[in-house]
Length: 346
Image 1 (cartoon, rainbow, N blue to C red):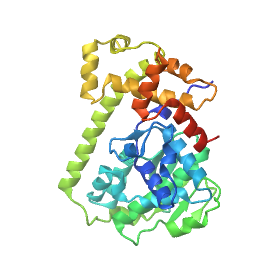
Image 2 (image 1 turned 135 degrees about the vertical axis):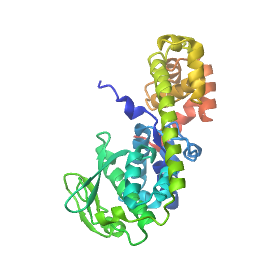
Image 3 (image 1 turned 60 degrees about the vertical axis):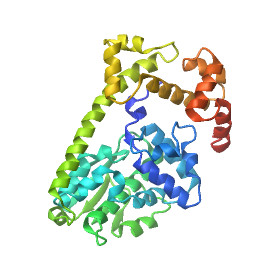
């Protein structure tokens, strides 16, 4: 079996887009909570600014949303819902930039802080400024949704910076026209080309030099410095937590403790505790999260008993596992397995 890319499982994507997706479904009378069943996330988690999700969790939630609302332009609806300030501090930093060009560059520089599941780049072409969108992973089942959401979000950001008169010069898409292709014209009000080589959001280069009415040099500098500082601290926290999680995954079935993990990482227990404390995480919290997420994955396998799952995630006593599981999820393994099978029988 091909090993799973660790980046696919890393919970490092802000939950802005999933929050908007849940709200889009709710506005249509659908239960947005269904998206998160068995994923180790709750609706309350999505409301926490510190919430981060993995690409795997995002993919599964999007697939479920597409099943719940077939034929809908769900990506466009979700992207249009988000405004420039819907992506946190990065949005406010863009608003306080001197020009639209600086705002765009800032958005690309901090794109991983905006919650997107795609990779963006920009270049100058003979037709205008092209912002391109490409996949991080090969996921054709959600590819159209992700591009729709991103480009509709670009549209909302453009309106936030320029005003209601903003529209792109052209949209190019690297997939065939979907069944809801007519909705693209309503959102972008420009030429739409499907079946192209890449995904391109093309806009007028004259906009690059336009000054922003909301520019504020002091606030802009303050915001950029804070974002940069937060990113540095986040990288430092991710470095130690990912190292600990790597060891824990390898030894999840064992009776593991912080002393053994510290030894495996070549440091003292005291040093490891200090570094985890500086990153505002606890060893037990990391262990519980890994056990919970692994248990939730294994519960989807009907051929594994609850007792087998308990042993697989490091519990020698199934009763203790059930008690811990109730603490993690407010329900029992059996009840959650039943709910999961009823909601998502496939």
